[in-house]
Image 1 (cartoon, rainbow, N blue to C red):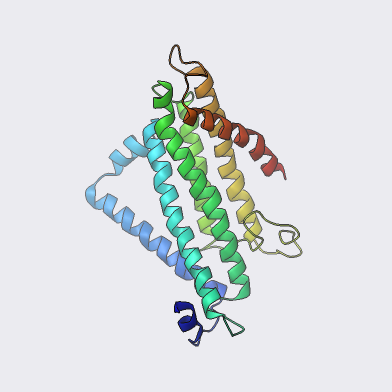
Image 2: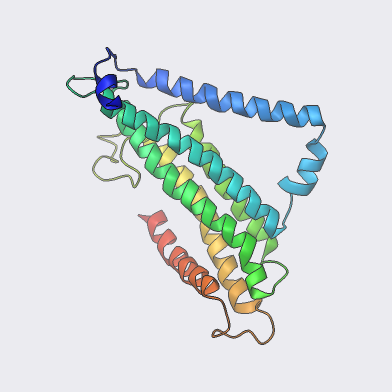
Length: 252
């Protein structure tokens, strides 16, 4: 019923610039609000010492989850826009956005939900629970763990920069050929996609090495493979896939 009601409205396709400016404005406003709150509370030194430079696995896990939830909201806004386009284009030749913008929103939604929501939540939860399950005080390489998080965050920032500068890829969330080739995607969108996933992928690869080393080397005394929890075994299997799959994705 809602789709039929929206379809009867007289919509005109919004250009890509209008959509990106709206999304950019939302991101900027949220960022300014957060910075203003931190400044008002005089918490910059505390934030830098306790969180931004931390190597504590629990706090890194919390930061992973926070960024993943933020990107979840970002991906949700893309999903709402996609559904609005489908509802308003019924029986007409246009909807709320143009066809090119629809492709960009579709690509951004898939990329964000898989690489920056699912992966972020997974690494965050692993950081929170894996050392406790193994009887360890921390992961094997705490500094590498922090570096992995900030590489993930850098990829997330680069993805969102496409809202302000340039455009996003219109070649799908896995850059489907031939749409990702220069002939069909001459703009900078595919470049944003490539670099954001390469940077975040390096962080994921380092996390995979870190977690597998933690499982192999930092188990409590007397904890062999048969005594290790199934969740820890699932982490071992997932990180093995990350180590073997991400370099192939990066090369291709």
